[in-house]
Length: 160
Image: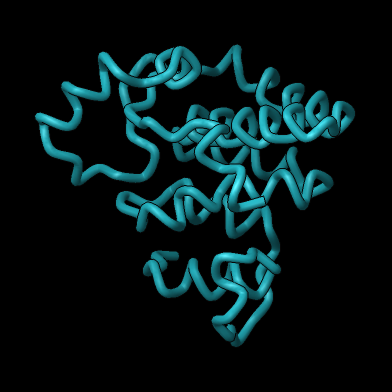
């Protein structure tokens, strides 16, 4: 299923994401399904990408077995682990230690299947100049998961 950015904004709003709560949606999606669809997208609006860690943070009991399996089958496990770890970092900063540990363990389960190929966090249209810049300016966490992104937990405080 291909989904456009308006779809993601409405679906996130329907699930309660503050940044898109003003948008109305026709259906309520399963948070794990929504996260997978977003992670499997080639190009997401930056505000949608920023919202992705909100899903595991607010729905930590989502079906992780299914999500992990589906992410691996689409070669999106690095993206999933990174998003889970961003949510974990936010939880840690907010003093929610149990949630942080739970999310960290979900990402750790993906470590043995970490992909060596470089990827973006759903921004394949990124220019070569931006890719080059991100290779030297991304966080160690993004480098570990071979992702070209500058999104970090400190950037997400306003979305939670």
